[in-house]
Length: 83
Image (cartoon, rainbow, N blue to C red; front, side, top):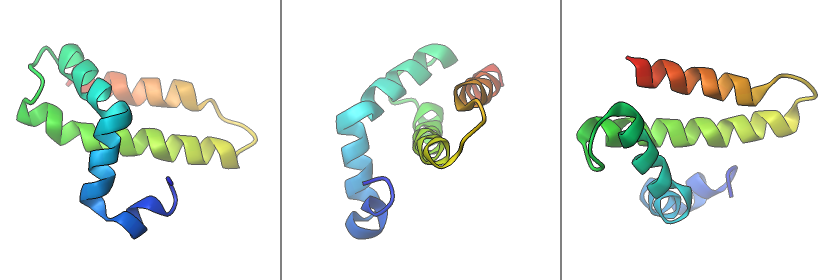
């Protein structure tokens, strides 16, 4: 699904699937970490790329024999929220 879903389904159905799975929780947690309300335009603007980052990290981790992707993702999220 991560590899072929966007090309087969298109961006809107993939966004819907994301919201039905982990996207809702991601938006909630981003809003909380940023001190904003859910639905805030800045939270929404950040949610899709952060979700894509998690997807890409999973793919990269599965293809790699090394690297601490948890630390990388944690570091990126801290930078995003601190700004």
